[in-house]
Length: 192
Image 1 (cartoon, helix red, strand yellow):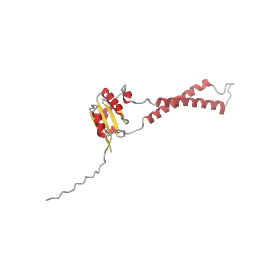
Image 2: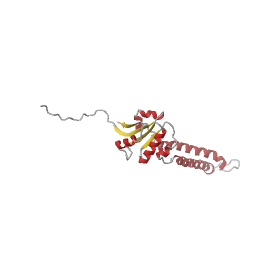
Image 3: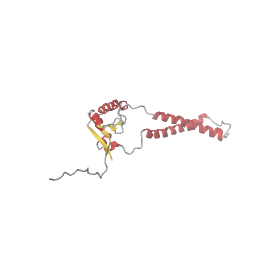
Image 4: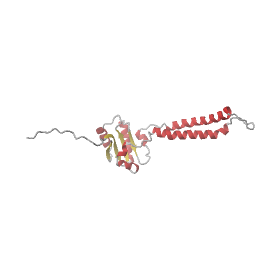
């Protein structure tokens, strides 16, 4: 009789992949809105909706809070206007007063166009930088890019992605929840 030989696990020499999230694919905007409301109501935190075009009502369905970007741009614009006016006042009336034909050292009407330009400059630069910061950009890679089906997100499909970093994420339970939303497919997002 032959003795039974203990089986040892076969070592893996290639890179191992780990689950980083789940991706649900939908065919219509209405299905995406319904799925977004369900994800919001379930209390998911680290999830997103992807559409090929702006979808009216999606922000409300996702429960997104109003953006802080307008306040940042407004604050920078006001600061830029103050800097522009102050720069002209101190330069012309305090540091380098120069009498020209008896005119005043500082004239408000003459200072408005340059102050307007510094307002626009500060607000514009802040809008670009704050947008990048608030959106977490630049981000050259995202887990959804590992999916071949996700290429249709810029064409004719709608997706909901739930990342594994979500506090309530549990792979089988979250997959079952996404399946209950009647998607075309639920796909695992894996990275090395």
